[in-house]
Length: 416
Image 1 (cartoon, helix red, strand yellow):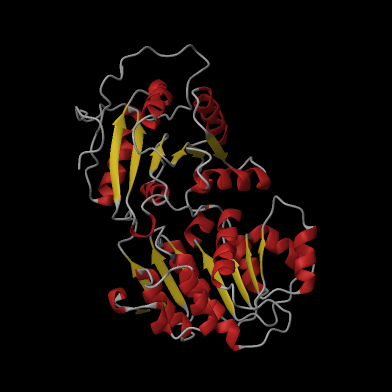
Image 2: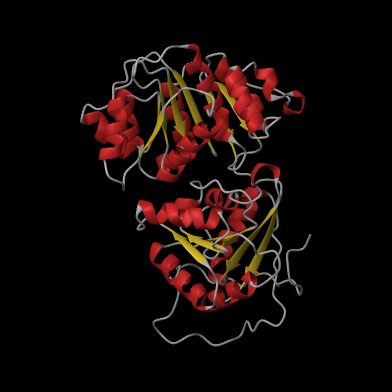
């Protein structure tokens, strides 16, 4: 597999020789220079090569494939059939690709459609009947339309598998294989992922033809602008400590991750009782509830959004000041994906993790993967020895070995 090696410091969007109407839209949005993943991925995609793009979240992967897709489709003539297909693991990611497409194609006569479950079929059926050039879809709903005969891929030119590591984690491999079987064999294939474990490389070799590999940063590495901090705290005091943190300076737009959908809702209710404006995002919420929660959080009407890992890769919101792991994630990769919601595209941000001593082994795994020792931090004047709440109010418990955590730092805030 060839590797791309463009120097992003010497590249501008103008140097890609994109269609003038695309450049006009890019300039309207105020973009001048591409991010590293865009600088390295766009040229081989424009040349027609199959590409594997590997970069951490928040680096601009979506635009790295949307721009060359739009450019290529402008070179040909639409026949009313789908010419480009993006497959993503979640409805949020499917919508994200379509939002990028609409923003970048304001002067381009191409039609796109986001296809996902949890919403009525009829609007999607109507849009497909009128013809679309690009579909951004989740696997299940896409297969529903395929089996109903509503989508004709005879003119398909490009396939994108977006966040493919997440799709495999969610068990979508059989669906991906079913989709691949109905696509024309001659097409350009693009695979984008935050990580490249062996099972993904196996899939890649099955569907890509002599691909160019574009990798920005180390695998499983967080964005460079993130400041990490570990807050050791007994499990039953996590809600109280979180409330104290949220009252600190600079906590303007905070994404809080919990392990379960049930506890995400419970924690949101606890915060609301303390006067915190909260949005909630998890798998049991309807599509309209998810979109409303994202919009409230994006517009600053909610200080906090409490979410499960469905949001770890599915939202693209600028200006998130803090990510707080109320529950520590199960793997170092999930930690990287979660905290990638802040410090997006070279900004800075804070990642706090509330850790009971049972969870310390998971912290050690994260530290080994990142090659970092994450600072331990305590809040002054917080009573860490307060008694346990009455039975029935405990948080979800993680069974595991009991270890003593490292001695906490005696100051408030991450050590710089």
